[in-house]
Length: 89
Length: 132
Image (cartoon, rainbow over all chains, first blue to last red):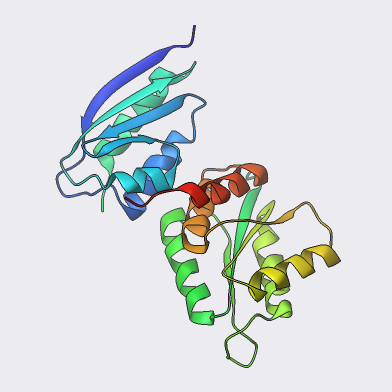
């Protein structure tokens, strides 16, 4: 049975999840084999798809839910939560 | 030794368009991915110049992981197809993708260390991506 992991994290107040911050997020997600979803106020996206993450249009301070499934799910969620906390515009 | 990196070539009728898009893609992908514009004709006019495309592919291939080429419209695509037919080479692939979204997505995917097939697939996934 594949492992699953989920956490909630807030975008820094002054960082929208666009352009370079979105690229940093997606690049981090791509390091893991797990399938990873990101839920934002506007919807749900594949965390490894830059264009779908951009389409979320998540604004600074938004609450994000990160959910991963796969052998490295826990590591993926921890790394992405750390990445979100450190995003800078 | 660093892992091979896939390079990106942006082909447009317009030099300004190709260079501007390469700038945007570099900003998002960071410095590790070779992203080369090939826009306009050698005399500065609008069009596609096969030699400029060929040179850009050679520069973008420096990362050792192969090259994904994106074109804007019509004769840009035909020029790239002609080049690739002349030099049948699985290391250089033309993406069937919208130019801006495809190039940016391909560049960011390449920056994560992805292989050529995965970078090409990322570019082509842009065909069905929604903006809203």
